[in-house]
Image 1 (cartoon, one colour):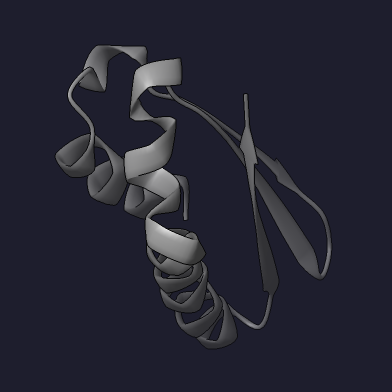
Image 2 (image 1 turned 180 degrees about the vertical axis):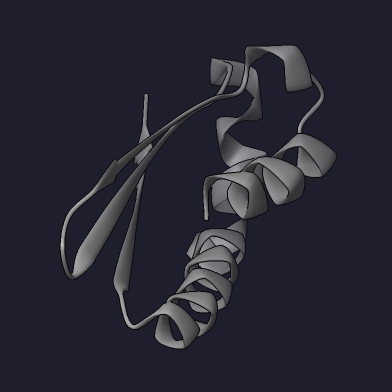
Length: 76
């Protein structure tokens, strides 16, 4: 899951070298913490949160195949 988020987010931002992703896996749930440069935060969230919602939808679809719930947290 971490690789999927990394692939998507690095294509969206202007500073891909400042993208930090941390994955905390549990038995049924994985939490993915995403940090980007302050200037790229709006690009990752998108208008009215549409981009972030789309990324979460993709993660949920991929998580269903693995039998896990995936939560994406975008940190400042």
